[in-house]
Amino acid sequence: MLKQTLIEATRAGAEQLVHFYDKEYTVSNKEGVNNLVTAADHASEAAIISVIQKNFPDHFILSEETGELKQDSQYKWIIDPIDGTINFSKGIPICCVSIGIEKNGEMILGAVYSPFLNEFFLAERGKGATLNDKRINVSNQTEVLRSCLVTGFPYTYLDMPNGPLEVFEHLIRKGVPVRRLGSAALDLCWVAAGRFDGFYEHKLQAWDSAAGFLMVEEAGGKVTDFENNHYSPYQPHLVATNGKIHEELVEVIHNRKQL
Image (cartoon, rainbow, N blue to C red):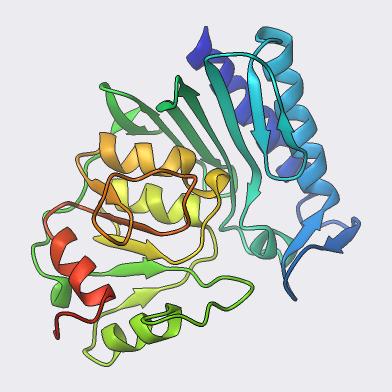
């Protein structure tokens, strides 16, 4: 019932994306110049939470717009009602609903649904990852130099050694194709599906990566922080790869290796 509720909640949120897409609606701004929240975000979130609370009223919920709906529960739902809000607001169909479920602090289920691309990704701890019910696996690329990577940039720039622009420059000056799609959840799913060989980002929130990082792991990939340590969605740095280029990409991010 848990997995079925996850699927139902994800689809309910996506219905709101379809309903609002390419129409007029209210838009407001959060921290950062272009960090938007729309009426569609709120409608999607409300639809998702309604499904969850109907089936599991005692579960903890963490959602991007509402924040924490605390419960004394071993289960936590981590929700991004629209990952890729800028894309959505501009009519760019690279956006999705992303929901992860933790049990006692371990991510056990994740769903990411992009209704405009007709792609429903689902992962279950120990049981693999699927795209539209077909098993997916990470790529077999073994060199960063020959990889196709994806990244994102924070709305508030981080002045730090080897920050987002510096790492980006190291890679593109060597001819490595690095994409920037605007949806971390889909970036992770596309690593899981073998479309990208790796993804890194300097500043993510739990709702950005909760479902997607499980997708990568269940598709045979590897996810860590920038220090190559065990990944937690409650810290900002993420490296997700097919596993074969992981250590090398971490070294490149720290500028300890030249390509």
